[in-house]
Amino acid sequence: MNDYEAQTILLAVFERLRKDLNLGIGELLAAYRAVAGGFGVEGPEALCEIARMLWCHAREAEEDFNEVFNDVVVKVARHTPTAEPVKPEPPVDRPIPPPPEPPVQPVNIPPPAAPSPLRVEPAPLPVKTPMRPVQDITGPELRAYWPLSRRSMVYAWRYLRRTVKEGPRDVLNIAATVEQSARIGFFLCPVYDRRMQNKNHLVLLIDQGGSMVPFHRFTRDLVETACDGQKSQIQRVDLAYFQNVPPEHIFRDPHLMQPFSRDNLLDGIGPDTSVLVVSDAGAARGHRRNERIRATAEFLSQVKRRTTQLAWLNPMPQTRWAGTSAQFIARLAPMFQMDREGFGNAIVALRGQTRGRQK
Image 1 (cartoon, rainbow, N blue to C red):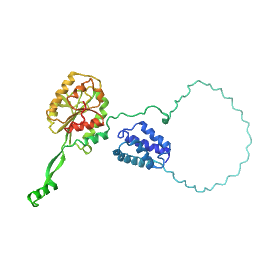
Image 2: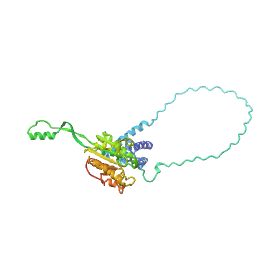
Image 3: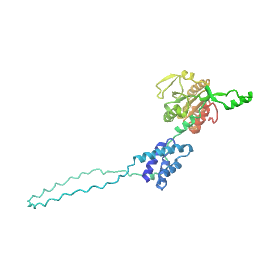
Image 4: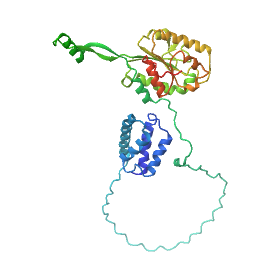
């Protein structure tokens, strides 16, 4: 394997796993330097081991990395042209050249006229900027800002479980059967229980537009991962969008074009419903508005009358909350910043627990 093939494989794997593994340009250049130094050029297995050591920082990410790497190696090998053997050409019978013709007498031809001198006009010279190789770039590493990856969202949603016994009694309870037989002195009949089923209901209230525009990518990933029942294992998800403060009418779509009454949303919230609010609460612009605080407090009080499983996810770091409306709203509801630890603590609060609350 030459350096070009190794760099092609590394670039393809980097583009597919950059978001999931939180990779930056520095990690890609480090892998290139390793290949240039002679590491990983023995074959795909050696290259996979070098890239895995440089890019995988968690054990759970190694399986996905190996799967993507093998897929890329197969696709690159499929599109690499193979040299075909050159077939020798069959001998060709050369024709016998004809006899030479007799010489032709020279004819006096007048000399051509002298060409007129060309007029040279000035023209701009082509200038091309010098190309700077990627290996010579120095300075701080270029890294993308990903406060919360989709993989972290999927893992955290799976902990939002609420199992209840429901359905017919078709599961054998061995412990209860033995206890019943010991109590009455002989085996009478087996004891059956109902199956455990996941009955979780999530209401997502997402702030849209305004100061939340830079975070639309993350809120969209939050909605998509939550609504994917096979990955998040959430049985029911209700979405609602608002701007700044949930008014009398909230919206069903992120474009704020389909309004519906806030009372309809509150009527669907029960004691077993988890409510997650995603908003910067004024921390993005550093504002503190009493009207926003009062309106938010009124809405949160109506939600607390129906359920205690409430959490607020703030995309701004906690250091930016001081002196803004978020500082006062954080006292009304458990508020967490949108990172891996904060989202995990928000899931704990949505389950009715209070571990790791941020104030």
